[in-house]
Image (tube, rainbow, N blue to C red; front, side):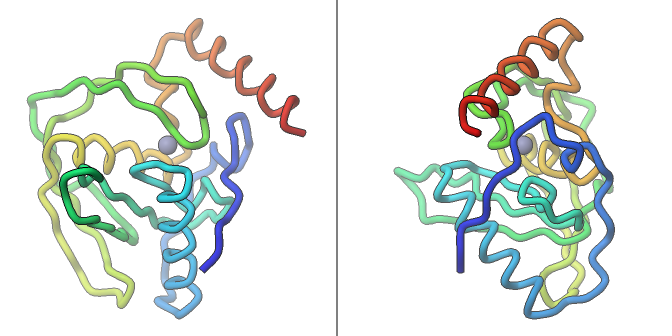
Length: 171
Ligand code: ZN
């Protein structure tokens, strides 16, 4: 396993639609392991493949409360939403590709997602609470969408400026 560098917004790779996974190979497993390690190291609760520059439809997440619960790593390949609740919840979201910027985003409180595991097996999960928000945030990444795309243009531009400065400072 190894840590992979996380792309920081703005980056054209974060705006692209990712391709479906068709080959359930040891390389895919290695990618998922690296993504989990990178996510826990950051630390974060979700990471999508485009964030490490791989334009494939796979993301990892773990929304367990780290101080109270056992880790619950999940790896979702080719996820799609099959149902969403009418009720919405608002969470203050952040993103490993947009460090230290947070904003309220409203999304369906609960979703059902169909996805494949690393062997290609079909799975379906009903997500609630933070898991539902995180799963939708990560799925957005696979379609080139960031949480700041839900904000007003002014706020989004401010965050993008901040990220450009951060990238310059890091370069
Ligand atoms: Zn994100």
